[in-house]
Image 1 (cartoon, helix red, strand yellow):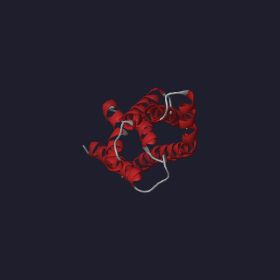
Image 2 (cartoon, rainbow, N blue to C red):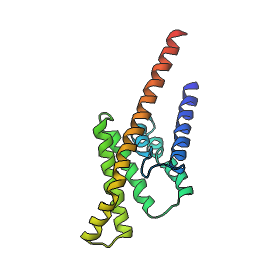
Image 3 (cartoon, rainbow, N blue to C red):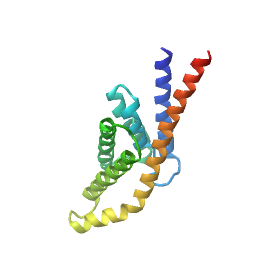
Image 4 (cartoon, rainbow, N blue to C red):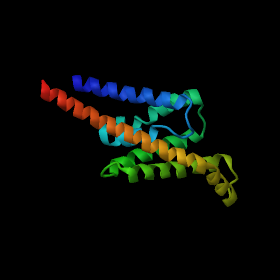
Length: 166
């Protein structure tokens, strides 16, 4: 019973912090959603809950930031990233970097499709203009993934030490 309450508290905290991290001023694309998608793929037992854990704070924060057709591409990309985490043996630098690349490619294909001429020049322009955002995407994904997994591991060790001393 207590374990389930703690789990719900952790999930609620992740959602609240993710929403806040997206609506307070921050560098563009420096956000925790990829980290949450990868974290939930490994640490949330219920796969339906896990796949929605990154989508819920995205949607809530998008209510404040604005919702448009691009959101479909963004949400689908994070679902794909979640499943990348599911099939990965472990979440490491390579997995996080690949997630950043997937996000960059799929969301920019969406931006190109929705906002640029449907030709090679439009595609190149779209991706070229997105390169500065890609740096922040990688840094944010690495930072938040590291924080989530290290915090969880530390909390597990702390809990283990508490149960040993009692």
